[in-house]
Image 1 (spheres, helix red, strand yellow):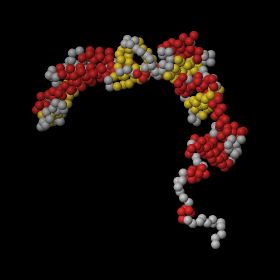
Image 2 (spheres, one colour; image 1 turned 180 degrees about the vertical axis):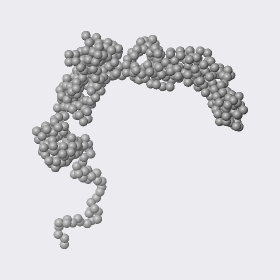
Image 3 (spheres, one colour; image 1 turned 180 degrees about the horizontal axis):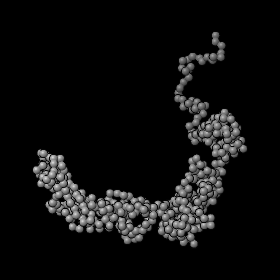
Image 4 (tube, helix red, strand yellow; image 1 turned 90 degrees about the vertical axis):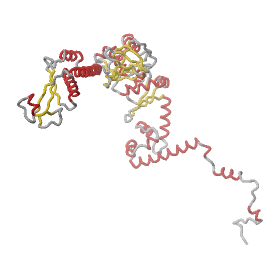
Length: 463
């Protein structure tokens, strides 16, 4: 059987759609086998041979030679076998070439449908393979339509979706507008590749700097991280591999033109460019700029810091709605607690006063404890005798006694605090007795008077 132009069709589809020719040939064979079995029976043993040079297709129906036929689909008698092979014997399998004119049209139609399906699958795979390499990059597109708050973006070969949570606040687009976005993910689904875009992701900010700052693209300036409140404020940490290149200045550009281009793309989002430092305390101070930091107390175990600033810089360090300190936490990876000098001094005084309530703690020892991280009686209670003894230079037994005393002092403070918080609940026993007497009925008579007998004092002599 020669299906018209089948070889040319296979070669063309393979070349244009990027499908392996063997896939199309196997698809053709499967379609012919399916059509033959519809005609000859579902259990018919069918083989298809395709000549890649000529495009000729041959179909063979294999039957076994038996003495008595039970399954006509796959068996024939010895006499019937002689018609195809005069030398056949019982048990031989004969391949009978089939005239495909009866089911050729069906086979061709089935092959066409399957090939179309394979083409669609190949196109979907091609879209996925093309865009999976663009994941994490910025891409340009045109707004095509809107779907329940999402923006469908035409990328040329495919469509992408910009979901509501990935859109910048107060951004409005119309159909036909050009849009730049970050390829957040490329999902391979049954209906085809789904491309997810974002304009709010911190990586979008970093990719914009890569496109605007040549030093970043060349690797001289390194982007260490970014944090954003989309449309409002962002921080990006930068460092330089060349001591002669100022990373912050390179990102700002001449007269601020580089960073202004990014600010314009992000619809006025304020960007703080922070110089990264391997010294985490210095990095935190840079991240909280423009606030001036007085001191930093580091808790490495909990990865947290207490940052003390001058009173006039407290609001600047925290920022509007806590944005500045929140972004600094995100970009540094540390939990930051910002405190004013006045508040810190008050806490220090309270801590010293609390520690000095212990019998063996004076001002010098309080300073030693405070510098070692013991800022209150609660810190003393929660430590072990061995650790406390090591800090104070005393034995573990003495340290245990100090911890026990701290517990007692702490309980006394808590009891005093509860008493001051609920003064009405504390009553004087003498006052309670007077109140009971005052509430006694006015007409109550003395028991002695009621019986008419005299009350005898136990101290008086009896006759």
